[in-house]
Image 1 (cartoon, rainbow, N blue to C red):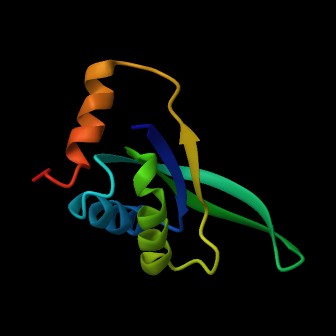
Image 2: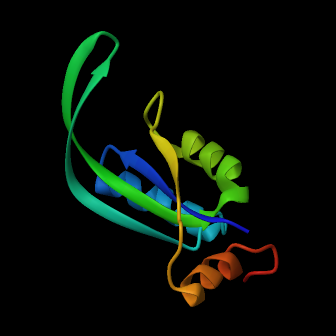
Length: 108
């Protein structure tokens, strides 16, 4: 069972909080971290855009990535929300087991 981080950008801390709460409540992740105050520069529809965003980092299992991605897309205001998975190569085994336990079908 592989644990992963999922990186998501949101338009505001409030949106990140709402999406994060839904993901945790649905046990699609064990935890989210919300990091406000990110400044983004990006191309959108042929134009260079600038904006303030909030980062949401979810801790979950790789097997839940599809369901988590679909949930973010359904809850997000962006036409194409950033949802990317990053592998966890190692770490505290107790913490990694906690992620697995809190996102298992028997959790709760």
